[in-house]
Length: 344
Ligand code: VGL
Ligand code: ZN
Image (cartoon, rainbow, N blue to C red):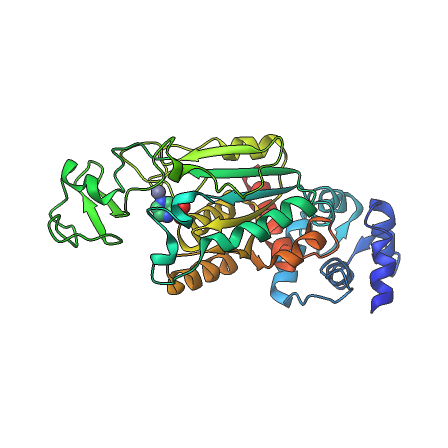
């Protein structure tokens, strides 16, 4: 089938050539079978290996583009498919989001190697730097956990606030990493951490060996003393957003590559929000380290079940250049387009 891939690869730059290539019977419309051939040609890796796409998903995608529901994608319908789907799959706009690679998580007060998974946060620095050196991302974002001294997540601040009577653990028994319920209002579950990433302290600095590229975006989170913020998009109560999503919208970002610390806390929460906003979301496994193995597994499962993908850094170049095209991300985009169309 390498031949069919080659034939199709020539057409990804021209809408009419693409339509003609796959309109095998020349009836000026694409049948589900002809559209299936587009999917076979699109969803391949850079060596021409075809990624399987199950029948159900192919049918869902077809239905998004067959707007009048006549069972065919005609030339008019194909314009939308081309502009909003195929173009993105072949030429995505890629953002690299590096989460919380800060001293405190690597060798400071919340050193994750002291957590149950005993992972070494420093190990993310070299593979992240290599990606920054070798991959032409369209934008690079560094997030920083950036807490005021009286932050609600610090265990030593526990005496400053009242717990709700339903709190699973009382104030006098609470230990680091336990989850308590604050009285609020609003009522709020909160995991207790050692004091970490205090604004303008050494612990909150990005690691000195992490490469900082020109024109990067920096996003500071967890700045409200009363609410924690694991995701780089919103605080845990979704009260305020960090402006990241508006900055990404201005750049017309389509794909977000997420990695950093901690895998099962801020990296995971950020990936979940990126998927919820509608981004094609890629988590870079070998550039992330976490707190708890079981939670890391849960994070991966959540990303995969929401049509995100987990990759290693060696896969990234082919993907951002549109040579390694994942069906999960194509499906994710089609489902977002379906929502957008039905909201019109
Ligand atoms: C984080 C715990 C507390 C993180 C931030 O960046 O993953 N974890 N605050
Ligand atoms: Zn924090």
